[in-house]
Length: 254
Image (cartoon, rainbow, N blue to C red; front, side, top):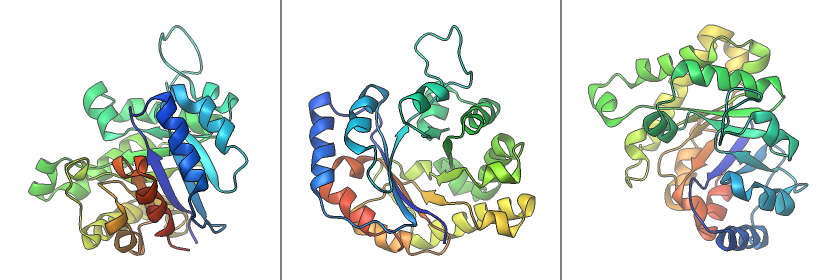
């Protein structure tokens, strides 16, 4: 069975004290992880040492960075290389989040470089894709998402693509309170898998975890995660609430 993942994206939130308290509360909260389940905490870079201290060595719990630079080193003030994250125990990196694409103009070609950089050091990219409301209303979401995947990922080998986690984000549902129905989520996730199957083969496509990332919360996670091609969620605001995120973890398929 594919890895089932609950990934918390804290974005640019919480003070150091609040982050420390939230991690302690989460560690003290009851949730159950089987061998094919994982929880990932994508914390602000400045809190990575704190998260490493508290979480490293916990079974099936991992820490992620929210972004990285595509170069291994150099005169890029303010940037952090994937190898730097790996050197402090962080081996998952979110790439191409819709906010990075919108606010920082990240392109598919840039994300292709970042993906290759993360894979080159043996770390795991969590690659985001998804459409804005105008594309959804036009009914062209499939071709839009397919282009994002092909332009940024199809240069890598089959051996590498199975190491990538995909996070589908309906941009129109992020932070809006709107959520795709479970049927809509399954439909686009199945299409994404078919895109990989057409290029890499069905066996490879069936190994790729595809997460849903649009206003996931405790009340809808069980239904969304029950869909056959949905392998968990990339969770924003609800991951900052202990009871919400614990319920989301427990909603993962076992």
